[in-house]
Image (cartoon, rainbow, N blue to C red; front, side, top):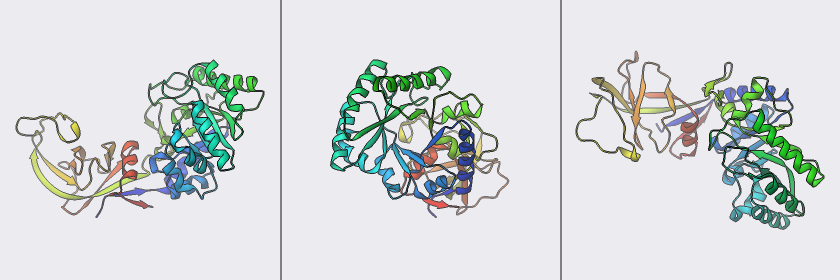
Length: 352
């Protein structure tokens, strides 16, 4: 059998409902981030059933997967000028921080006879994308106001992705004030203040909202039931919506430390080993080309030893199960492992 990613739609639905119900209390809208599952239409439909109406992805190729779905599509990575045509065609809103790019989107929107909505990114301290100076964002917004086929909807920021800076009352209030400044300078109403990603959800879950934030872009928390601030499971949410199963292709007893002079292993890693004597090991027919090691076996008496591009090695010495070659072995998938599995053509996707 091919490695198979099992996707539990009911668990994703339940998580989405919990997140939406929490944010509804504060009139905060959700843009569901879909890049982990490549904007899979089946998962998007499940999220829509839970009441989510906006979807954001970092790649236009993914947004094409839901081009016929009646929902608002966001491009959440800064657009490239070279992809302006597809940005306007397949997204309703894009996040921007360069006037020249917005100008290119305007020219393409004229050709397509559309008005393209944008949010301006403002950097509140994480030091990834966005304007850093308030004067710069005001100057840019004033120029954008004169573009006939662009509509400025508000501002957005990103946190905890590059610098690890956590959202708090200070930096998110700063974002709200930037939006208010733009409203005053442009004499217009801007209806979206997108205050970060899944880490921002923690503040609302803990009943510590930031007034003026109207939107959060959430992926991880909905899909894995995880509090991304504390890197912990949220009680009552599902953390096991994604499970991979792969076939055992070898079982052997071997030493726990490699024998001989050692250098780098495959994929430029230099692993360390602990001498645990002779161990019983199973090799699975899946590897780092398809997954990441960000997983946990369903069998609590086993553990991941490591892997290479095509193999995953599991210590099964202490398991109560009598595994045989040809059996399947299952593991809970977390974010990076699931992300890689969805992009691998060698992994079968199975909805349950």
